Length: 165
Image 1 (cartoon, rainbow, N blue to C red):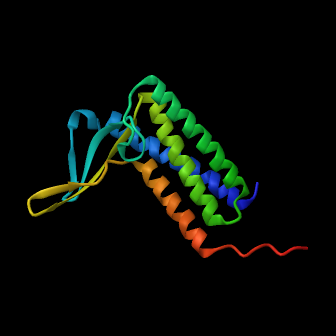
Image 2: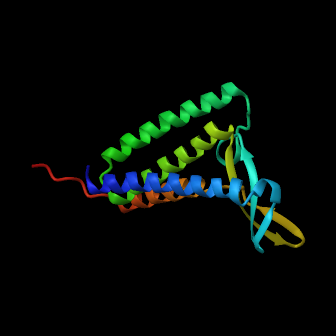
Image 3: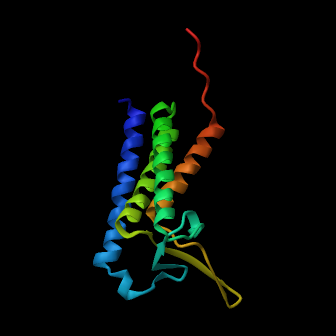
């Protein structure tokens, strides 16, 4: 196993562990379900949101068939990303793919355990008496976004083509 591949696998495993640890702590130690929203800063709250849809709560459907279909699509995507990661030629792309894989698996664990993804981070801003909220998200979502950003950055850097022997 090459060093970039190890880094990609490590980034996936660390993402899964941190994501699941944060959710377990918030649910069972901090007990966010009974506390309700907790203001951390003037622009950031901890809340509990059960997301039965996909990214940003799209395609909300709690039917068993829809949940199974979503899990199958995620499993196929994770396998495809893992194959891409195994063939990746740059460290940054490999780590980015590992972050995406780890985030997808972290959220899939939630679906299997709870039937929905545990989201808890809420950024908001108040302007002119109105409060504007960002989507509620979790550490798996952060890893996925960071992984996509790493892939985009890596694609703009470009990799020199391998020279023929």
